[in-house]
Length: 203
Image (tube, rainbow, N blue to C red):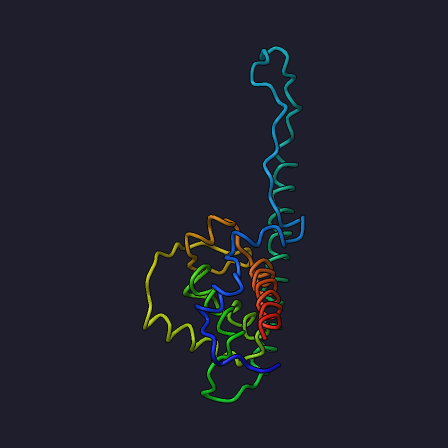
């Protein structure tokens, strides 16, 4: 693919209208889209009409709690293992040292910085490195350099399903409150695919 050197990222966005995150919800799988369901439960029922549910023995409740905690620990352990695999894979990616990002890579990195987070976690940097096929260290340095030059906008601390504490843009939280590694990967893969398609069109 011929690299586009005469079109800046800003002008490229205007020319091909790459949508921001909130416009991408229609592209996500149905399982990722959330809809509000109307409740059919009436709040006007007489208390006498509501049959109380059977109480569960304390021992049974404790067993269920322990089981839930065990399942949660197992899931968290699987997520951590997946993060280690991604990080190891990203560390093996080699790209020319001190080479600038190309237009395609810049579009994705800029979208993440402006609309999702200025402070991607190590696992998210690894996912970006894999998606863009760029060295982990170079992706990490790009965000560090951007923060030094353009640290603007608010950030909110949240926890991912893997237990990572990250800082997200308010816009990202408006789109989805419970961000995870898998959802972040979906967002950047969809955005990256659209950028590549649009760049092919304007060549």
